[in-house]
Length: 92
Image 1 (cartoon, rainbow, N blue to C red):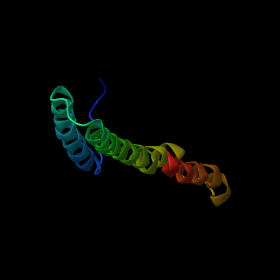
Image 2 (cartoon, rainbow, N blue to C red):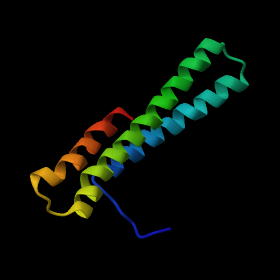
Image 3 (tube, rainbow, N blue to C red):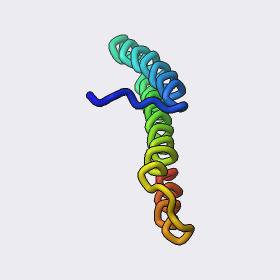
């Protein structure tokens, strides 16, 4: 594993993942208890949304900080591709 690389968004990401972990435990219990399929499907959506939100936050944070650092100082014309890439990743 590489050196620690912590950003301001990491505590928020950890909070989201811990929430997803709790929801996932609940989902397992519901499945083992034979709960209604609709209820299980709704709970799956909750878990999926929580993990997806954490992923989007991480990717955006990485682009906002790490990509910016790697790109250095570029002219406005040179930044267009980077800015377009950052904008389109919001749709992931």
